[in-house]
Amino acid sequence: MSTLVDIRQLTRSFGATAVLGGIDLTLAPGEFVALLGRSGSGKTTLLRILAGLDTAPAERLHLTTWRSVVFQEPRLLPWKSVIDNVALGLRHPDARTLATQALDEVGLSHRLDAWPLTLSGGEAQRSALARALVREPELLLLDEPFASLDALTRLRMHELVLALWRKHRPAVLLVTHDVWEAVALADRILVLDQGRFIREIKVDIDHPRRRDDPRTGRIEAALLEELGVLPTQD
Ligand SMILES: Nc1ncnc2c1ncn2[C@@H]1O[C@H](COP(=O)(O)OP(=O)(O)OP(=O)(O)O)[C@@H](O)[C@H]1O
Image (cartoon, rainbow, N blue to C red; front, side):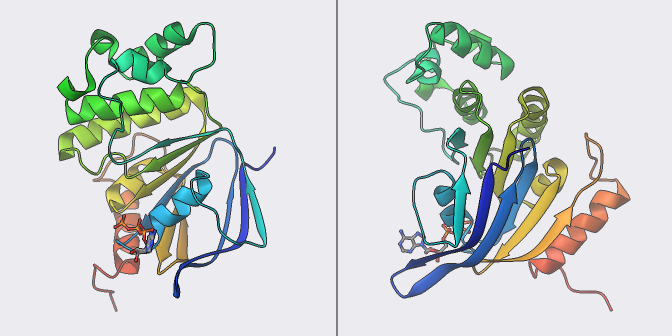
């Protein structure tokens, strides 16, 4: 199996400030990895490099080019309908059919012709997911895609992302500072602190994961401790 991401000793500085200090990361096809860290730890900086939006020195920097990104805000073009946003740039004779299918998969078949500004926050992010997935990427990069949604909508989006991941099997890299989101979704959680990985936790629990499961509770507690927001126990 070929590796989609293979990075060794990646560094990124802005002026004299080192934001990423020697990152090693590999991602295999179909993996679901969460990148967890406090604000300013370098998550978005790393994701932008993985997305090809930025570059930086590294000993090795192998990245699949077959990737899509969903950002915190939907980034839909307001003067195009939802379906036209999803089909935009798709060089395929059946682009509209594929866009219709993708919107159906995210539960938006009734909003194909809607204008983006009339969508709810959850609907807009569903459209952004459809636009990312219609390209059948090997790697789906999610940069806090649910952070601005209300808590209930966010939980629904978790279910949707899992369903889409199971169906399409892209590798997913999810940037988040929501500890439960990481535990609920990812197979592997990487904790980033001041531009370095300080912890990796594998989550070997079947989906759907419940918050009242003691196994998820233990992982959540370990992560909160790592992030310095839960007092360590003696
Ligand atoms: N273009 C830039 N120029 C200068 N500094 C930058 C630039 N981009 C990011 N930084 C700095 O790099 C650090 C890491 O930023 P980054 O956005 O990667 O953090 P983050 O972990 O994604 O934070 P958040 O969770 O708040 O989005 C921050 O201190 C930020 O101010």
